[in-house]
Amino acid sequence: MKLVREHINEISLGGSHLDRMGVGKKASIKRWFDAAGISVNDYTINDDLTIDVIGDLDLDLTGTQITSLPDNLSVGGYLDLRGTEITYLPDNLSIGGSLRLEGTPITSLPDNLSVGGSLWLKGTPITSLPDNLSVGRDLDLENSSITSLPDNLSVGGYLDLRGTEITSLPDNLSVEGKIYKDF
Image 1 (cartoon, rainbow, N blue to C red):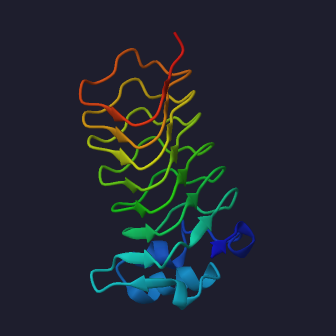
Image 2 (spheres, helix red, strand yellow):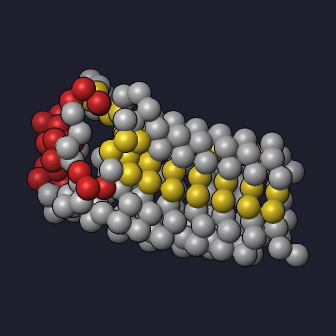
């Protein structure tokens, strides 16, 4: 199932009831998903307040007014945040598919980020990647502000470094596809 921006264009978590009450209450989380037009059949709020978006549900939030996401969010499909005003990603974010962040003001990624598909950071102001980052498919850093790669970076597809200031690769880098870099 794909959730498109038309369903949630007017949602802004900054200053919302969810933001003021904190994510720690299941009722607040449920209201956020209800307002987004997401059926209770498409997600589960676990006892530890982690949130699982069931199956391969895609969240396309491109160009919406969303300013934050709830902690402990797990999306089975892709998460597209291009063109949003989100400035940070929540703790314990897990994406089964790809994560698109192009055109966002996000400056860093959480240490415990999990991305099963591709990660697109093209043109973002992000300056570093967390240690031990594993990306199941492609990692696109083209024209990003990243200046070095972390230890134990694992990329299941290609790694695009064109237009970055990266001048060396860590010894323990694992890339299954091609590496693209300007010289």
